[in-house]
Amino acid sequence: TPEGFVASRTIELLRKFKNEQFFLTTSFWGPHAPFLPSSEFAGKHNPKLIKEWANFHDNLINKPRIQKRYVEFFNRNLTNAPWSIWQKLIARNFDFMSMIDFQIGRILEELKKLNLEKDTIVIFTSDHGDTLGCHGGQWDKGPYMYEETYTVPLVIRHPDFHNRRNINSLVSNMDVFATVLDAAGVSV
Image 1 (cartoon, helix red, strand yellow):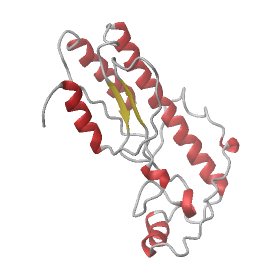
Image 2 (image 1 turned 90 degrees about the horizontal axis):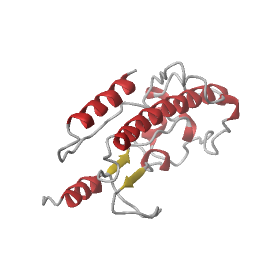
Image 3 (image 1 turned 90 degrees about the vertical axis):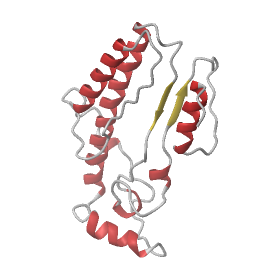
């Protein structure tokens, strides 16, 4: 899979630069549609167990007109699709994310094998979330500011942070650049 290729290439680069200071970015395309997990991940999530989103039937009344147009035109293949169809799409998305999680695990395991785990800062984040059927059957991202698209993970493993901490603060993906420069001791 492309995800497997990206992880393998990352591992190759870790091996190549293991004795030097390095900065490495690994970017997975997914979980964008089409959700095509490899066979060992396809079907891991049972669609019938995915409960209907509370805002699935949002009629978009009193919301900007562009949102309704987005559902009707950009999402036209799924406009008015029943929850049972969305359950299948969401389950396949979850399968795809499991495949990506596995690939990330391969990279983290390689850091450990190379004895780089204690000297490497690892940052995991994303550029956006996905509506996946919320707010009247929205798909992907779009002209709206819903929690589903704007709340994304940001996990940082820093060798100097020995205790696990959850910090519930508003940050932006623009903060990542400054954080990396600061950690590397490099000025802007």
